Length: 560
Image (tube, helix red, strand yellow):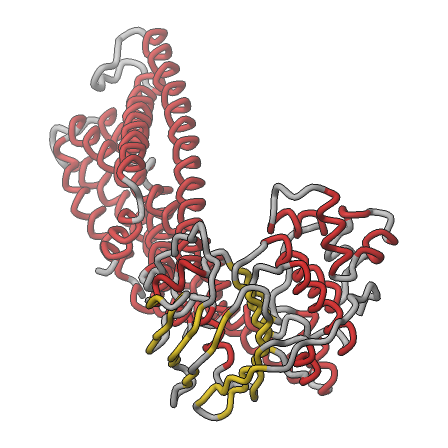
């Protein structure tokens, strides 16, 4: 039986303080179970006055009073337990998503290299929801177990002879917990995998739509999406069928077992009708819990593959954030740098990085430019690194501290904030409104913002104000200026601009950051007009060339 694995796995996610809350939840649930059992027992003398049962009085009004008290306590305790349980589930969900998101933010780039963006999106969304459902199911199972134990204990107290019903109940629970358990786990595992596939079809849908339409492949896209949806539907159908099958076994067991217990009790000496009624009421309270118990086991099985995926991402190697240097000035010379991938490796030698200079990196796609700038930005550890700062040896850890105040913008990054103000404030929360307008003017976005009539509160993705790809890139470059980095890496961050606008915007960024080293990855040779150094990646080497002094380029205010 595999359930203890999921049970232990979910409990292991709880901090020590939360476990005390779980104990309080269990005590409240147990108290509610006791009050419910007392109510069931006290119902007997109310229905059939004169029949003796434990802690019942000969006075109907007294029995009615205690029945009401126990019923009210049952309702209040169960209500309070439900509130506490809901708060626990909410905290569990927040902590679960927060922890895996924080771990992903702290993961090394090589550790994420084999992960698809669709799978990561799944881990942060639907997969976490499965774990939350599993935790909620675990709570319900705990309530069911406590209620069963209390009800059976009361039944034994009232009529020890009817303890013969216990083995039958335990057998029914065992049988239903084993029915198609392996198949349910397999179905759940495929369900998680197919949901990841569905995320692939949902990623960046407007861009995907343009691609699909341009190829005239709408029918193929519908078929592919339909196949994944059909598998998800089949998995969901099979899960419900398995739940229904196990519920049928429970209901058949109850339909046959409970009458058998009563017949046995009638034929057994020493069991009166009052005890039979009381025990019947107590056992009847367990029937809904038997059904919910089976469903709880199914949800826990569904959580198993989700837990495995969550744990895999939580096990990623963590990056140690460098501590920025107070004084990160000075010339750095990288004498030897070697990175992988690409598979054969890439070597760079003799690169000087001086504040205020712009370094252009060019080369064919897939040749290793991203790996190179990842190492230059300190985000990925290279295979080999030898450097000096102002003539003194510089280890890679010291280089990471040197460039810790950085800015890295790539072609595919799109702002997720709501307004232009939000996007800029994310880079520098303390910037004044005058400063924000100034950086927009530098990147040539001020006219677009002013003409909107909404100013800095212009919605980035609004229905009537959606920014174009070039305008979004200008906005991201405004973030770079506000950041005031030691090293700025622009990995095709101006690809959506035309050639003239690209030069003008890069000239504006450079002029605004006189103390920064700016590394630009671009495919247009014209950018060399702005560069001090050209790094040309060819084969397994990155050749470094010092360029003639740059000519003056006036920043453009014309949007792309």
